[in-house]
Image (cartoon, rainbow, N blue to C red; front, side, top):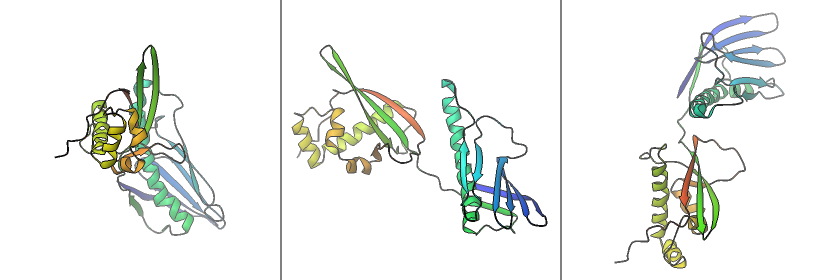
Length: 247
């Protein structure tokens, strides 16, 4: 994705140089002084403000304190019907802010920003989509109902419609079947008395095997950049097809 900013103002006072750089959504005002460099970010002229445009501020002075960007969401509450639309807008704005980081903040911090140029730009590579997938498993044991959950971060293959729950279940079943056709999987099939089900995925399929098929086990530590959240409901006791017969 290409981001371009044009210099729309450049003036020199007795002790500072002030430049304004304008992009499609945001404008940057850079004040270059003897002792510090200040950056102010606001919505570009001609862009109608909406609560879905993220507010961005910058701390630091690019001299002895590196510039750091703070992002503030425009909304605190969102109607359920608006969740998908607002999420898409936020994701788009965050991509633009990554461009600001690459074009302005990083070069100002390391002293490589070109104040003499009239345009600055960058291209951000498209990142593979990842989804947080919550697999709710219900188990009926007589009159008792037990519920469990597994959480994964999954990179969906191109054939999938990510809005279709059946496709997510098809993907998970397919990975389980591939596992059951490995030597470890065939042993797991015997261990479960030929009754390998949803609950056995966590028990028998290794993180390494899942990762090879675009599935990561969720860890609450560290940052998590995702494209959406998918919640699936399954009967834990649903049995999977067994491994292919040896010929």
